[in-house]
Length: 239
Image: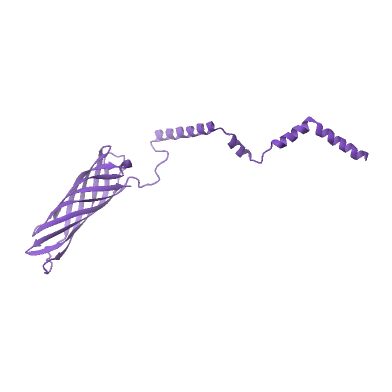
């Protein structure tokens, strides 16, 4: 009994000591959160702003030193691939008959071979240009389409912030798809197919962000198997 009483007295004395109270207070101050979380919560907004500014300044310095944007575009085809179409008046003729064209529209696709920042840009192109027409050869009447598939190149240069000049050269193959309107067999001279060479030019007025949409006049002249003059309005999209 004396030993138990002595232990009780000793415990009471230890609890009453200042160090024991400090221990107890330390236990109350403990948090269930990890040190990393507490450090993040205690960080002031000013520190975050200073860190963001330092990162931005570092990226700007790297861009000025290397000339390469810190965050390059994700899409490698940006401002290189384009689609265009045009519609307008056309004059078509060939030797050995008289022809009258009723209208013409075309479709073209191209891929830029040089960066957009170059002063003059070159692009490889494909253009499909059908001509609806009627005509007479050796007293026989025909109706049909001259379908021409062109492969070539286009050069363009921005002469102002919203104006671009365009010039093109193309080599094509003209296929004459005709039918006789008088019931007679189509003569080979009327349905002759062959090679044509086309030269073109015009201008685009650039609209939307970064000139994604371009609208402007076009003129094409083709000669060879047939002579075709096209005056049209073109509308193109660049991706």
